[in-house]
Length: 341
Ligand code: KG4
Ligand code: ZN
Image (cartoon, rainbow, N blue to C red):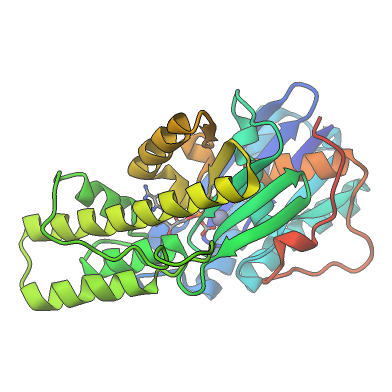
């Protein structure tokens, strides 16, 4: 089965084609980062308009390399969660192509896309596993028993971890989205005079809270104002250490609680080098294994949507009747499917 996938939940337009027989993927990605940078965050209306402008030419472009649109067997798009206008663009295009070609169309859960992204690599984790989903909008630990059998073990009560990176980076005067910039700044030093709290680690449970970290950063910034470059790097270092340490502690607890030996890390913050190094070490110590998507599949992309959609479409699932998008959508409400192709 050849599935065209469209991702448009936020500020990336992702188009991909996944072929379930050859396991091959073709993809195009357009990031709107520059458009939103002057506002210091994503402006939803501008995001929707950019998806409208970019998506169709990108589909034409990928088809020039791949082949005839009639050879597409089905279409998958991001149904949610995400920005409603941005989601509507992808959904409308996907539905339009589906109607024109008389092919099935399926709305995919964005976080399921992230969660299954490591499967696009050469080494697939077996089920079950614990998934740590860390993006700009979500932070959650999930017990993944099989595709579509998800139990949320813990979530952030306030800021998502990517959001905490971005807000703290903004306080340090870094461009949007600040996560990778803050990480690069932190890497400029190997120590810090500051120690940030590890929120919610001194009590049991798998819930997270990251909003206090940006306040901790703000207090230091105000106290030491004006900051020189080495102080900024020390703040970034202390922040990144606190975040990674908190995620390490909670992942360890989730593995204890489930008894699993496999951890999958996905979502934009999964690109963070320190997080990758620390979790690799933790899983080695536990005789387990951690799986990360390739860096290009960590942040939003069409490939993960084409892939997750293909698994479900291949199992006979498709949208029926009137279509809608779901800006808020629980991962636990998804139906299960048979093991992957
Ligand atoms: O998954 P994603 O592309 O979009 C959402 O679905 O939210 O994640 C984007 C988030 C942003 O907050 C970005 O700053 C963060 O991932 N991010 C990073 C790194 N690369 C991206 N955070 C920390 N370190 C990185 N290397
Ligand atoms: Zn995402």
